Image 1 (cartoon, helix red, strand yellow):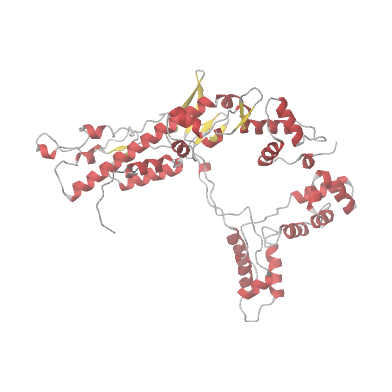
Image 2: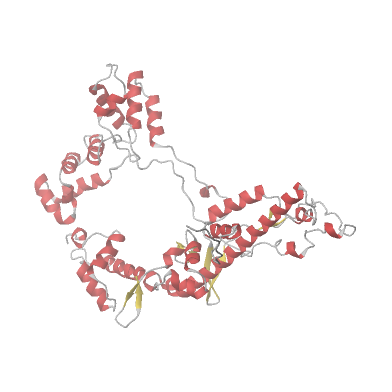
Length: 475
């Protein structure tokens, strides 16, 4: 093979650090964006929060050195320079954001982590009179629980984890297991849901009305609990309808997963990125200043950067200044994009804001991207995990996007509006004669919306609405 030299011209897209930062900030939610800005304020000396100073504060910032006697090669890049003043201004956001309910610093806004199920059970074991051997068994049982409080390993396998000393047998493990199952919450460490309900029923006082009937019902086929099958269950238990209703009411008070109310997760509060309200007959969008903290370049530190100085300290300050400019520019771009996307959504969904979900219009990312002349991926990033405070509640941006279904007059209806219509029809139906999926399909067709029966069934299941057979109630 003969060697040769060849010259080729090609183009490729290179993502600069500035573009990567802008894309990353674009998709951050409000809480994570605040943390990002806080980290930048701590690591970059050129940045400072742009907040109104307190009237009682009298401390003045240090004076910048005079530049009149400096050599032209040491010109200052500070607040008097045109390339720094433009970035010293804060990010444009609404200067008022009135929220009902008092101060934002109330204790209700701060969540504390709750104790885990294992810690709660171990605390009770430590306070009990169990011996050292039984405490070892209890610790092994607690470690074998899942997040719902059910025992995930058989007793025989737990014996292997406790060692081969021979001082612990299966009866010992079962005895400690029984004690653990009657600790708080009652029914914990049961192998399945049925056993957890049995333990909770047996723990009730003997004089509890219909306790024995409820226990027999738990052992029966649970498919018979549906309203259409309760006559069969009533015949098998040999009781009347009033007794069966009382037994089922008793069962509904039980917890099938006793450990589910424990957890180590913290409650996260949603911070709306913008608010929509009607002003003088028009819907206006305001950016939440809490979701986008105001920052600016510190003029004093920016004035320390000098041209023609190649020292290490000056280079470090120059890098910090450039990073600060990039961050502020990226935040400004994010705020402008968020404002434009929110305004476009509000313009398309004014009917929803005024009348509710049945007036929701079909909308996809491509529609917004074409309206604001941006790429569809940019719209997808800016609408991810962003929230809007509206008269209909605090909703995620994605809530306003919905696929379309053709109507009889050649128009389109959104899937959200169809689900709202199905929910309204089911709420107004006769419990003795609930509407079937076919009947709901006919009602929608009469309203000019052509949709298949399987689509109605899918929407119904998504909303958690039972089938017509399960919704049927006796007169």
